[in-house]
Length: 228
Image (tube, helix red, strand yellow):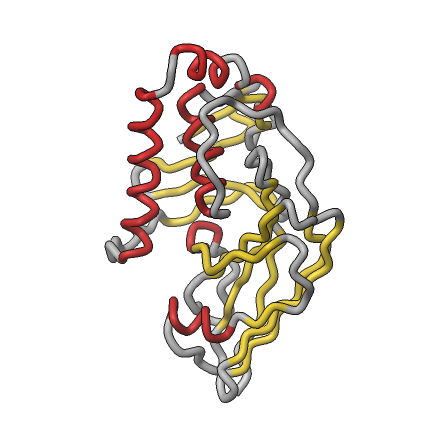
């Protein structure tokens, strides 16, 4: 549980006992904590193996290589949910960047890169059809080149009234950054999550990664109700 204090508590975020504190456009809220099912799928195990592998590779770096990561953390600082700037540790930065690059099919970086500006996805709409087994994603990209990779993530089908799926996204596929819209994702989606069901809701998230540095764009999310 994270708490930011003023004269009284001004914001809370995280888990405590059976509750989760967070906030969205409507303001702060509490919801019941739900323990996710651990299916231990091959995809899940592959992701865990990536994290383990890169954590182990950190020890194999030279002292100069590790120093480059430790000295680069301020350049890769992020603003947290309270608006405070947070620096990653050197090892966390090394693992994060290389997991991204591995997802994009790129080689391991042993020396820390400088951040770069990845191209952005500015619009995204998706249409899902049960009878045709199609899932079409139409997007607009700005500045995304062949030197970048488009990462497409999706989540399992949820009820039509569900809006909170932040932790359910899984990598569905990748495309060369210069790939033109629209993207046909139906076969890939059903191979990963099963047949689409009319009336259920699907979320898709797209972002781009710079292949040289692992810099990532802000993700763009869209959802749709599967039609019959």
